[in-house]
Image (cartoon, rainbow over all chains, first blue to last red; front, side, top):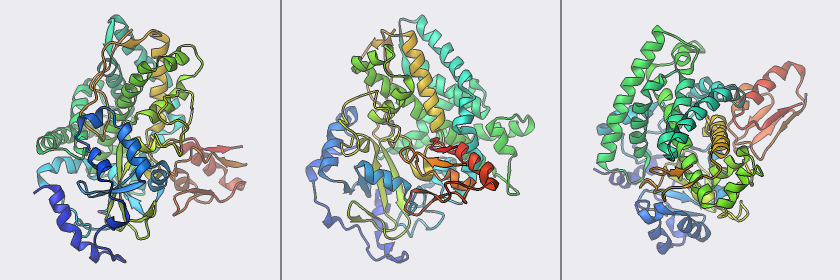
Length: 437
Length: 62
């Protein structure tokens, strides 16, 4: 049975929830802009090729709408999304407080047991107190100051890979640079042999496709198989670290005692895996989407090569302009949530359109203009609230290092071919980005 | 010691509150409140650590 079938059946249990009276969303209060909704088809390759005209239209027509296909309230505007990200009445998970039946949601599909196991203790799928406990152990490695100490190492990795790119007249910024770069950096922080990077990339690419709204069974099966292999790899890694400890993160997670309790192996596995996945997917896609924009805006590229704008400032516009994460969800866990005048009941899910928020004219002057000199770090590219990207300082350093290095080495860089986006809406990234030095 | 927060970049992660709840509180409205702008000496180490832990470097200590 499909997930949407499960979800639709479950609505009648809503009235068992505490202080909860409305059984189904009050759709009548929202205008029914069918023409806009019809164009918000996340499987539509035209939408994926350039979602912004449709997102602009939807955002200007309505701050919030009900998506019957996914059973989600969809948020379109910056302020509502920024506030919702911080709102503790909503969370990334509900299983710490409610059963699947209470939320009218299917139990995890046993066919994808490995995927669910890999995610079970992920920071992205936990709420306090477990989230607080695990995040505290990890975050000290990712603070701005801790990350700054890695600057020389990160520079060296970037230099070596760009040396290799320079030997070819034309190179793929993603496959030849961004992927090996970000994987090597995160592996070196975690203490994972770089020789394993290729497998990690393959597993990660398969697994993250599970987060698409329209993932089919073949995609889910591939994600589940990858998750199973990734789990086995991580279990072996932890066993190895217990025998041969070092002072890097995986070893520390395997050793640490938190208020007397050691972490369980599933906790260490999920934590390691989410850091590996998050540690490169978004960075790679930000570089790809960002350099596509830079190549399409030669005047902005010249501001970099002329030294008018520094790489650190440009990073913020790359993060804003073409978001590598287009949609992010939260569950409503407590009563009283009202967004843009719409009451949202406990048990319902909101989906925040980051790409729309980042182009909201209420928040950004001329939002569709790619302007690398904005230097506005208060966008929502890293989310907000307790789930704010733990790796944001690392991502900012990796991106700034990469931009500065590429600008210095290849000032006449141009597109060798017009790139194509992966056919996925939620995680937005290019298949490859062929550039001529 | 004087504590200042750049509220434009504060993302309400609550990392500061985990370290030093005497000075930093992210309330149920989702926003950070500085409870003591000039905390006593006994809190200085914790305030410095809280500033250090902030992933957006929003907290400055003078």
